[in-house]
Amino acid sequence: MNNIEDEYHKIIEFYPNAIIEKNCISQVKIPLKDNFLLKINFKNYPKKPIVNLISKDNRIYRKVEKIIPLLNRWEKKKPPSIVDLINEILAFIDNLESREIKIKKELLNGILALCKKQHPREILGLLRIINGIAIEYILPPGAITSNTSGLFIPSRLGFDSTLNGSIHSHPSGNPNPSIIDINNVFKTKKFNFIIVYPYNLSSIKCFDNKGREIEFRILD
Image 1 (cartoon, helix red, strand yellow):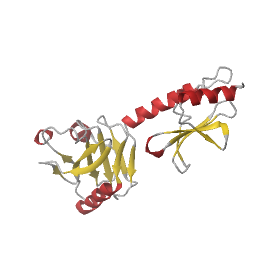
Image 2 (tube, one colour):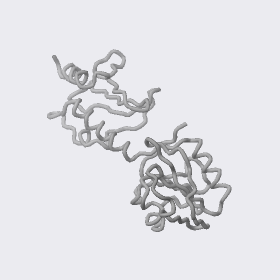
Image 3 (tube, helix red, strand yellow):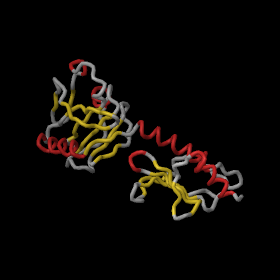
Image 4 (cartoon, one colour):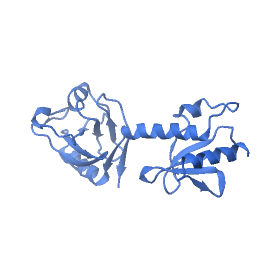
């Protein structure tokens, strides 16, 4: 049994849902959540394999070579097993998903319309998040907005663990959070969106409660 056959049998043992592509055992896909797949081409093993996250229609969603340590330090003379590589990638994806928020496009379009209506004043609201998806915009009681800032008083909300996100606009066009944003609006929320003028789907960023940019996805 050669290296490629040995690696293939290990993959099937650990990941029985693996899909062979084009009847070639060195090209496999591992189904993931949300109709994404991990695509691995190791036909030149022990040389470094080609690995991508792809959508169901076979489009590349993310290249992972630069963000996975095992790929970065790959050595042909001492290659890790493909199963070990898959395990590391899946662990990375799990960590990424814990920091990634999804938001419904219909909800986002409504908020964008509100931003345009209120311009040049800021809008400020909270997001109800269920199973990692922002599903509802909530106007916090006592929220105060102006052309340059937005504030609300968290104690007026009571406890609601589903209100784990915030969203506000920056009419100035600056997509970065201010110190006031981080110390007030972001402080108790895991996901915090900023929408900047001219208020379209490409003028949105998301941040954690420390003001670090994080991933988000728009759902149809």
